Length: 166
Image (tube, rainbow, N blue to C red; front, side, top):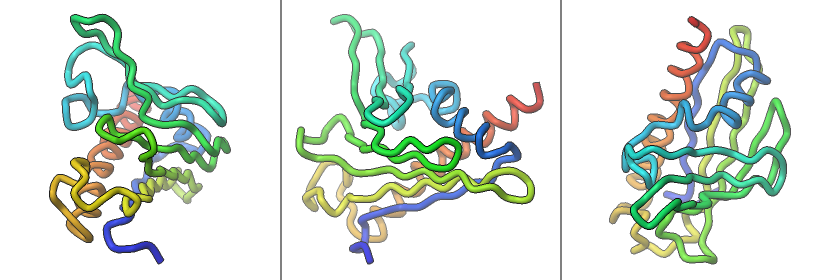
């Protein structure tokens, strides 16, 4: 069992097959991932957020600043099993080089489409006063991470619904 505050899990249902949900999650990330400083280093400035397919591929954000193009590697793919499973490391911009957490995304078939479950875990490896914790511990911290992922997954669901309507 994980220590309190180590992980957050969020699930949504989408009315597409797992292969489509996996493809949208990994290949159309920039289109559904919310914008603004809460979700991206670029905030609302032009830029992109994308996965490189396959094990070892990066999850990265690139954007323009007055100093030129900036690239932040948010993670590396450790498991790439379309259409059912994706696992990647996660590094906030304020993480030290040796600090990372892990995100697992499952795409499970249902009678009406796919249940997408995101579990973000490994937060107990970060010190209690780490800036990524925003002063929160235990269940309060897990709740904050869950709400953040919940907002992102709502964006995914809304994007898929809009995409299907077109």
